[in-house]
Length: 102
Image (cartoon, rainbow, N blue to C red; front, side, top):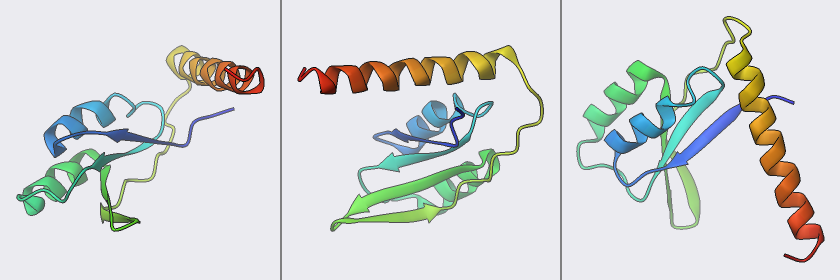
């Protein structure tokens, strides 16, 4: 199992850069904002520098304001293995809780 894409919810694009940046060693990433930022040009430049996508959900549609950079694994590490194991654990635990009606 491997994680291919992470989307983090954030109130501001600056907060989104920090939150999404945590996933840089593991997968492609994007931030989901409640609305388009008033300083969209600056947000797009900063997000583009770090390869982070920007999207908003409005009027029932997901709109990409900046495309995320494609993730390319540059090396194998124990941190990537640990990350995949943690995600797998969360997914299987959630599935077991749903199956049990909890």
